[in-house]
Length: 188
Image (tube, rainbow, N blue to C red):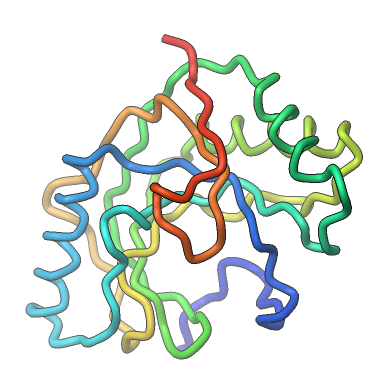
């Protein structure tokens, strides 16, 4: 059985250049990379590991229909208006999903990630209010660990990957945390 697609596949040229995301803290990112390397060895799969500073949980892309002058500034302003509280993230399983160039190995949550979904909803609402085109739904919250790998069966983690989401960022497609265009704290 083929692995599911999490999001509609867009042609490479149509992929939005920017997206809002949650990034794990440094300790959690190192733990995710250690887990990914362990899974590569255990399951004898190849693929390209995401570097620690590229790991993220996508919230909402911007520029699906192209970016007009002022769109980036409007997106930054819309993000600055968000006043939600911090929330925990908990990923307790891995799954293989189809992506460009093969499969991706992702972290998934068996329980609904209410905080992620709420932040994505508010962000989409604010972006739409600022006149930006935004996609309709958030998809399943996930974190890609390995890309261009082979399909692997879903598995439960012995120890879940958890962290407290205390900020969100505006990232550049394919970029690292050092290239984030903005970051906004979530309330304590």
